[in-house]
Length: 531
Ligand SMILES: [Zn+2]
Image (tube, rainbow, N blue to C red; front, side, top):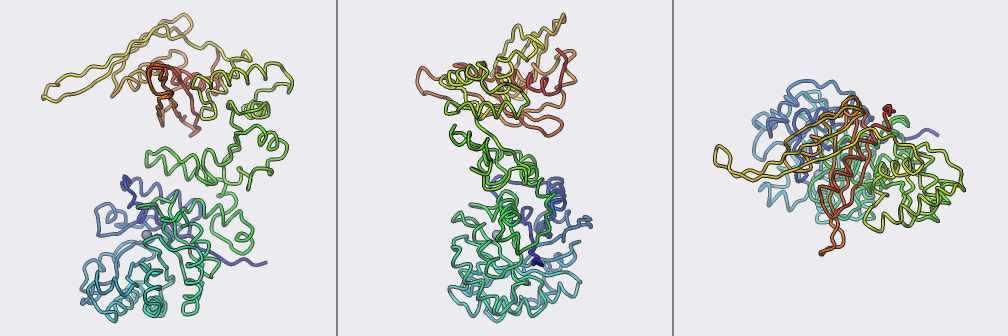
């Protein structure tokens, strides 16, 4: 059966840039655009040329994307001609394949925010679309507050959509700007729009204020829309935009959509979905959402023993899709609730061969339970679990020995009279017959200890030079005088592989030291460093 083409439009770099705490540099924007282009997204909206120096520079030259590179801006201002509106002129001059205008379609906003007449707003839409068409650009019209506008005055909202389509806009995009519309409303309203604008010219732009932006986008597709806007990882102001990552997973893997529609993302590229999602977090220097559908670290993680034993027999028992399809992996969590199956499956995954009824399996499980009782959490620390297992099975070399370390924290007034806090660490390490001593300063004691520890590991230094700490999380358990500190450290190597290690102690430096040591030793094991 011939499938209908559905187009994906990414606005991570424009609407996603409205997220609290997100500030893309030009370099970031080009990196994100390249990720999207490679994934197979049809449109990449880069930003708002003329509104800020980064976006102006981004559109100062051709960026050579396969995707339709799109500039965003407003329709001409009330009471001006298109040629006399400097904002519009800058937009028309941008090096972009397409122009996406935002226009008001809610009569109330036209009168109150724009302070103009409904007729002039319609004329502004027509003039602006015409001006961009005359420049040879593909044109999209984002209808701001479309759903609220439709509820208030359906005739006027439809007149705006129709005006853009009649002037030759490729897409009329219905925006749920406040994000409060529900899926059944979206479906009914989009259906009404398709009676005046054909569905293969209608798009949806949903915000996530009721946690239904993805559902709203799919409802619009069911009602006839053939263009879907979203952002990577659902970035966007307030509660975010429709998450393009989840949308791609649904459109590619749910037969109701995959059998009817074709998108630009191939099956091969779908297997990069997890990497794309995490790459964005890396560019933003954020920890990834473990519970993100399809791509989160926990998306295919099973904890309870009874589920785990079923999953080992047939993964389909507890998985809605295959994790490999989106580049993720199945994870059987090892924890105090775990049974033998989890432990065996995890050992198999990391390549440790052991008989099912080997008494060491029961011993390992008991050890995990004992350690979890004092604060360890192996389900969050796969690398520390692997080391524990390898040690109990006698397979981890004693690469080096930290004979002593010293960390201090000093607060003082510096040369220009500012109060500063600095940390310094000194580490003594024995590697074979070599006794090494390293010192380092850091912005905190753990940072200083990490830097000193990794400064000189003698013959092992080459194995760890690509090692980086990407996340450091601290939690105080059993509040009160008996409190212990749990530290989780996430590391990454030169190949982009990530792992998490854990340390637990009443002392935060000790806990951090354990987790740092596990991370380094894990990297040495993984790299096949000689004993
Ligand atoms: Zn928006």
